[in-house]
Structures are given as C-alpha cells and as structure tokens.
Length: 310
Ligand code: SF4
Image (cartoon, rainbow, N blue to C red; front, side, top):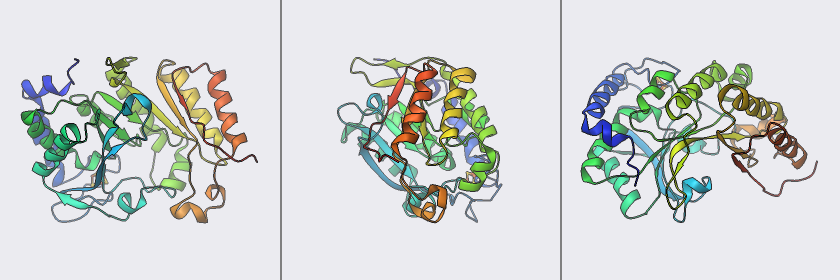
C-alpha cells in the first residue's frame, strides 16, 4: 500500500515545524490571498474564522468523483467560513453565515479517526479548509500518532496563495481544485474577491509542480495521489468554462483529470441576479462538452443530469 506523503514529513519533524509556523497567522493572518492581516485572537477575519476550528459537519460523502468515493464514500469535513463570497454558494449557511460549531484540535483529530475507522471513508476530504490550516496540521500530527493513514484531499476554490500550496505539498496527496472563473472582473462581481483568475492560475501551477501528471490508484481504483480539476458551468457564462478547459489543455497538461459539472442551482443571492437566476440548460452544457471533446481532453468525467432544453 502506498503511504501518504505526510508520513515522511511527520518522521523527519517537518510537520511540527510547519504547524508552529502556521500558528503565527493567528496573531496576523495572511493564510489566504485576502491577506486581511487580522489578529484572530481578538477579531474575526474577512473569512469569518477566529482562533478556534469551526466545522459545519463531517460526513461520509458519496457525491465526489468515483475514484474519490469508492464503495463507501469520501470522508468530508466541511469547515465554517470562506474568503470567497459567491452569490450562488450552496453552502452559504456555513460558508458565509457562520453556521457551525467549534471543535478542539483533539476533537478534530478524533474526527479524522472516526472518518477512517467508523465511517470507513476512502480519504479525508477537507472542504474549504485554508483558514484553519494550523489546527488541521496539529490535528493531523495527533491522528498519525493514533494510526491515521488515509490520503488527504484538498478540496478548494483555488483562491489560494502559491506559497500556501507549497506548504500543503508536505501533507496533501490529492488536489481537488475548482476553476470558478477565468475573469478577475466576473470573480469580483459574483464572489467579491480581487484577482481570482491570476491567483487561481498560480495556485494550479504550484499543484501541478508537486503532482505533475501522477494519477495513482490503489487496487480498488481509489485515488491515492493526483489532481482533479472541477469546472461548474454557470448559466449565461459558458465561455468561462470553455476558457478554463483551454487553459488546462495548453497551460497545464492535457493529461489532467477534469470534472465538468452541470449541477448549478440558483440559490442564495443568485436568485436576484438576472443572469444567474436560472438553471443551466442542455444547449449550454452540450456546447461546453463539445469544446472539451474538441480539445481532446480525455481524462475525467462529464455529468449527465437531465437538463432542460432551451
Ligand atoms: S484566512 Fe481569513 S483571516 Fe486569514 S487572511 Fe484569509 S480572510 Fe483573513
């Protein structure tokens, strides 16, 4: 069985050093590209995070791509807060409205163990976890000492600093990044952040520097190391998804696995934004699928929900 990369960095002492350095961000946080510099021991950051871990839930999650799900499911831990403020966020109750409960580092390590030993998940799937990185590494060290051995999935919007991705390389084997937009202007409009696309490209490059075209499955076809890029096609904005696919092909690697998603739902503030206030239609999705086929991007998945005709 292939060992996750964090074992090496636990044994050589790197993880402890990384954890100690990351904790310095609690006094002046610059963990994400917002760089709000807040003292989290006294105030909430722009993302809503304070100086404790806050999670919404941890679940056995069957909805990820097949090699991340297997027969049982991914072991999802959903964190509270987010530095992006997407108007169509399906998780807005915990990502933007602060729903969740505080857990200690010890409890978080126990959650990792329950995901492995009770839920029998095939991985630990950390969803929008960046603001809680110091605690996540701290809990990982405790869990390793209790026998934790699952590969860890970094499930991210890709609004990440490349230097943070570099640090993740010490304990993350699987990246599950989105490309949400290929336009800084549209990202500002729908997610209220600056420089999304410039930032996303640098983060993706760093992920690719670490993993390359590796796509390592175990004997049960469960992913142990690799990158899967997700693209959620937005109604009236199919050009964004097409540009993202073109970028993957020509600027990253045609071998990367792509998950093209048709499941956009007009929720939260999107209901009041004309161009986002409806579901995707079949013609729009087919147009993006055709582009993917034309580019000969052969690795990945295309969703096939029943979409309405125009
Ligand atoms: S992670 Fe949160 S607190 Fe830290 S820089 Fe980003 S928005 Fe600010």
